[in-house]
Image 1 (cartoon, rainbow, N blue to C red):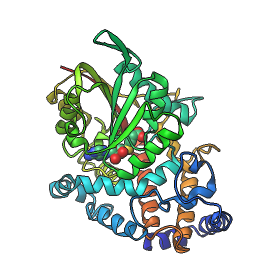
Image 2 (image 1 turned 60 degrees about the horizontal axis):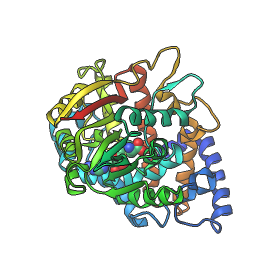
Image 3 (image 1 turned 90 degrees about the vertical axis):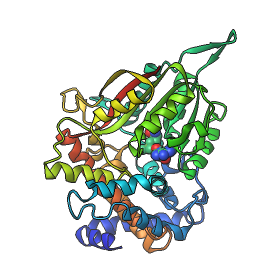
Length: 406
Ligand SMILES: C[S@@+](CC[C@H](N)C(=O)[O-])C[C@H]1O[C@@H](n2cnc3c(N)ncnc32)[C@H](O)[C@@H]1O
């Protein structure tokens, strides 16, 4: 509540405006709201009522505050002392508790992500005259093209569509787009049960239940979930940055892939411009880590090394945002940076401030659970770090890699 109060003191107009909208919305919708989730929920502003407050959620109303406090305890000292969460002890704590860290994080942020961003929880390079949603879809279709997911497989003389694995699948936004695009079947894994429940619900609502399936599990142990050589292709989008040990993650992917199958992904990494002796760089890196449930961010070369150690021949890698400041590109972080567009308003700085004020009001009215405002504050702070990391080009969320199973 301290953060909320400080914010309210600094931004009285936004808080008052957001509060009034929220109050009106609440009064108008409290009767009408069906308090479970569906895939069109966040198309309307009234559905803000359902953020952390819906019957599909696996946390009970009184569990959110303890969850955000436990999450924050794994990043003790973050934003207070630069370098604190980069020390070995802090990183080891998060690696040891990665299951809690990631599960807590997605219990808390999944609704906010969907509300503000959509069902695909990732960034993508964006070109001039390209809207946000098509740029996100293009990043996904590119993975289909590079892994060959649109191809057929001939097995025992029978031609069939490919089966692909989505490593760290969120609520299945990419999976659904990619299944429609490539016509292949996709199964995904996420550690977070809430995401599995709503993701499979969305698959049914979109008529894709025969092509898309989310399973709950830990991608540190993928062979526990699927048999060896089950998949014809695999991809991960901005998920394995959560891994406490990428060799374990990638080796598991290799086990469930057929020989010669492709695995491609986009990783969150630090670039060559990151200088660990520059306090500003470290501050930005740590701000991204604490706001995104990451044990620690690594240099991109670590991802390539881990792929090579995990049974893949690395065929390609590069930063898909390498032209971030080229004349023909819209920087990936601009979406967060306040460039106004009606469709993307909620993602902008002002849009996030309105959401924050609304969440604060809903929490004060005891409609949203205690702790909601802390989650919103965490996400707002990290958005600024992402923008700074992108502006300085020390960080990219779209380090592309492609490997072939040996
Ligand atoms: C940023 S989200 C990306 C989701 C999805 N790829 C997308 O683009 O919409 C990261 C995902 O990785 C999953 N994840 C992180 N660590 C995991 C683990 N150890 N096992 C399974 N899933 C994990 C999270 O639950 C979440 O679904």
